[in-house]
Image (cartoon, rainbow, N blue to C red; front, top):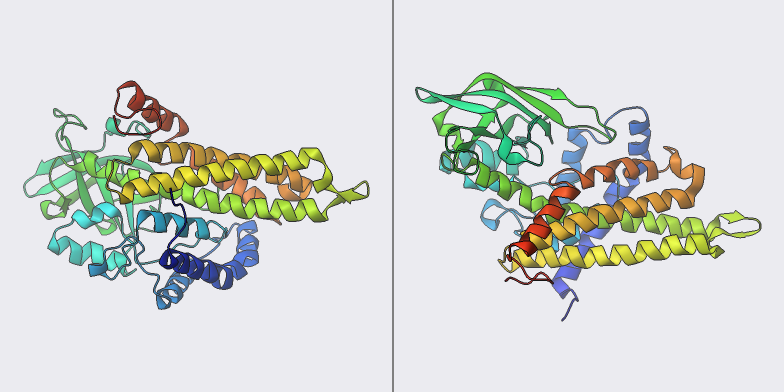
Length: 390
């Protein structure tokens, strides 16, 4: 088995690494200062400026098809790039992207929603989670009732990323309760904020925060149905599935940066006349972190490789998401311990990571849901031990 990268893959990774180090990392102290003052680390105009700088290097639309001006990179390459982004805590992401299910739009919808989103002129959010339907996405209640040529939406979505900034949302609603969510009873709608929904900020332990979206008799024309009537749950699962290898890819980058800080601290911090790195307790924390980091790396790359091969990625992606999320939580915890009291302050990014990565074990499929998927695949014979297809 050859795990080495091609020359092209190395060149792309190294260019991204160079961009992050030269253009993004210099903003870190300002981001920490702003966040200590309860301000956004980057505002939308600053993020946009960085994205346009990256575009000059050719980095625009990592997963976007070439016909829309994107790079259409492989899942493995995208995974490697997300790891590089994870090396900085500045809230940066490359531009030129749109929600993967937005490509199901028809020609008119692409002109109105997809292309402006790719170009950065519009901001979208995806809304399926509800107060009573998190991991159990099949329990959604937000309804869409047909009224003439319109649909009237009523209900609430919650914990919606980008929900505070989005000018339109892709919302999954129940259109036929008799059929049930998994039986074709839900539909996805493209709903402009101007149509009447409102967002409410949710304060969390992390920086920034998601939103609740409230729909009170919001009228949506039938032309704004995304895909087909009854396809909503299917599209939702496709959207969620993508995050199950990008999230742990990001986690690997965070863990690598945090562990490098721990190594510096272990070499330079002295107690009782010698560096703390000479103490076995510190050595074991470093060794355990390196082993777990390397194990997570190969689980994540295996999941991304499975996507590239056109194979069903759910089993491998669930393992990568489960282990990668747990790994980065454990590594950051050890790194904070190695830094002692200073690691607990907001002068360093460690406590910020501590809060940030805790979310990785919850969103886009909790640890418990990943375990359910993994065990169910084995018990039902969908996969064999070792991840091979049955």
